[in-house]
Length: 299
Image (cartoon, one colour):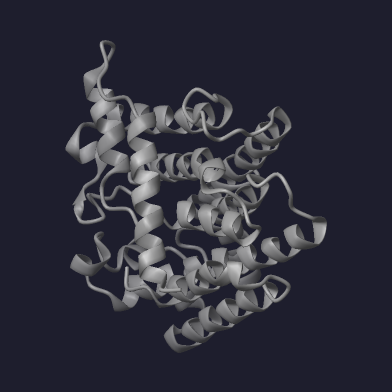
């Protein structure tokens, strides 16, 4: 299987679904609707939806059952980036080579756009109206909602972001850094894989354990590679300011380990992820290839 073709197919699919979910217009606030769409369709890699579809495929599931899940994780991811860029957080001017939401609109609109994208994610998961072909049972929807809630809140992404903000200028050890990124970055990546599996309605405990091991490894690898790219890539390639982490005095894997050791750590995590998929057949090929893509991407 050629990964790029698979990725293009999945990206096209989730983009079409996202267009159906996002408000086209609004009699309440057209500016808010525009800010939401701007923040979702600004050139994202769609890694999390890709993982949803790939995990669903690994278990022989049907893609249309995974559509609401793919949209939900991307909407949560988009909201998190809008808020992450705000002056109170990282105060970034660029995201994916374009002005951040609060620069393109204003700070208040960006805050509301993030809030609205987050709540829209849970609406997409819970309301069958948006995805009539995704015949998920009520118990499946509840399990998916629970998974995304935990991954998004204090026990997941928000908790990790808080730890990140409180760690600026501090020297963290590897265990502390890993704890932070397992939550800030890893939680939603892990949820994407697990929710993709849950969307099939038939995943065993053994399969779920293997997929969790895979997801934990690639979630951490994703952040390690981000830290590497902050040092090695230029602003144009990154689509955001190069060296931003260093400028903000944030602890990173490169600052802790050094560049070469961080690269080796990412490679080791990739191998750990691929090894975790040994009980699956060729249906898991996209997941295996995505692990390699995550640690060798250029932006």
